[in-house]
Amino acid sequence: MLTTACVALCCLATVLGFAAGRRSFPGPRRAAGRPRPRRADEATYAALHLAAMAAPALRAGLDRDSARKAVRHLRALLGTHAVAITSTEAALAWDGPCTDDVLTYARAALAAGQAQVFAGEPHGAVAVPLTVDGTVVGALAAFDDELSAGLVRTVTEVAGWVSGQLELAELDASRRRALEAEMRALRAQISPHFVYNALTTIASFVRTDPQRARELLLDFADFSRYALRRAHDFTTLADELTCVDRYLLLERARFGDKLRFSMQVAPEVLPVPVPFLCLQPLVENAIKHGMRGRRGGGEVRVVVRDAGPEAHITVEDDGAGMDPERARRVLDENPAREGNGIGLANVDLRMRQIYGDSYGLVVETALGIGTKVRLRVPKTQLGSL
Image 1 (cartoon, helix red, strand yellow):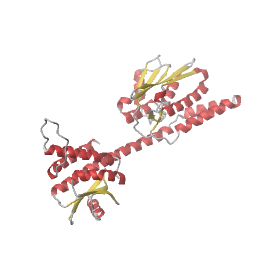
Image 2: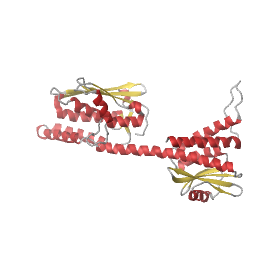
Image 3: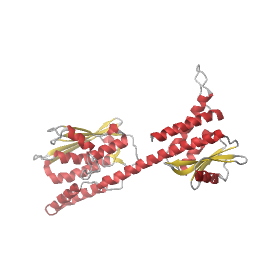
Image 4: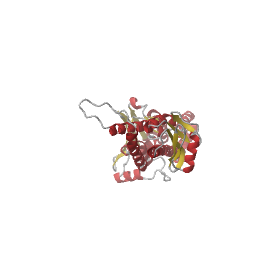
């Protein structure tokens, strides 16, 4: 990605030099008492502004809609009579009067793999391939009445910059696909031990308390429907807490009075978007380690607070705790390793991937004092529900 960004900057530098000599752009108003900006400065500002206007559309990938939104800014950047963007099969969008030969010109450039110049009346054309990761995906064509070596170089550099934006779009799409694949794998990692224990617990009530068995079976169905649904990257904190509640009801039926739990939630954070299945694994971990070796049972506490731009979540148990070095190794474990299930390492990795390294899990623990896991979630939504 850094290489793509560097190439894009080099392309813009070349374009700025050509634009400054080819035409003048309207610059920002001069403040009173300040020296008048140089013409090159005005051209630089205008070219960067036009590139910034075109970039968001191109970062969505190459299609008719993105081409339509970007092409007028590219035409203003180049200062030519017309500009067209094509795929390998069709003309996607154009700004200014283009000739009917635009697709023919584009295909010639695609076949040659480099810029092609076409003389014509009243306007000639320069067509340059657009590539993503070495694959030709379309072409940029500029039409003008003056075909110079400078124009050919500039159209080529702008096409390189456009290709860089399209490559960034593909990187974004690849990241989304990776996250979706991870979510599918995550749903497949629902602990088989939990499923077995839940069904065994339900079965134990079938004869002694049929009504309780029915209620638990419905709770298990609700939990499974949520955990195994075709979900997007995000859900709401309210839905995630409902999933945790169903899970706790099933575990309470299994452990009886030995398991004590409490949930304290600030109602204003319930609509906050959170990564799918980010809390239940923490509660499962708390029960697993909090109840281990405890004859008198254990307690799990979930607290969700409103912290301004963030929601702060803690999951705490009063179990035996662990050595802090052991906790560090747990977070460093490979989430995909067989037997890990949906563990702390999985949630920690996803939080860092989505929000950045500063949003990884914080584990506070020591031998004999239990374990507290802290989770911070920005209220700004980074994905679609």
